[in-house]
Amino acid sequence: MKTKRRIIIREYDFEKLPKSIHKRYDAVTFKPLTRDYFQKRVTYFSLKGKEYLARQYMHYEYPESLLRKMTGVKFHKSEYQYWLVKYDDQGQLKIRAGLGQPESRLGILTYVEKNNADVAQ
Image (cartoon, rainbow, N blue to C red; front, side, top):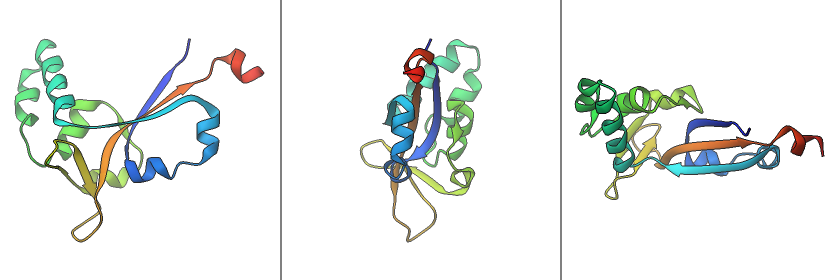
């Protein structure tokens, strides 16, 4: 069975991943985080009986807390949790280290590990 690992990463950092990472895994994908993604998570938490959590973070414009509490995914770099995170006009999450710094999309990086049989070859 193939296992997946997920981490939250900037698109800039995703593009800078070494080629050895792509060779080590079957698939390495980046999916941008959007308002739609979090609205689906709100539904999930509401069904799990944690509606208070869903309502608390659903419409927040600066969703740093939303990332930690509603994704259950670790950050690629721990510094991300202190950076400025906001939605752009298309509803995608953007992150930057500080004012005057360039923005980058924030997303979920998914690694799909190779089967043991594939690794042996």
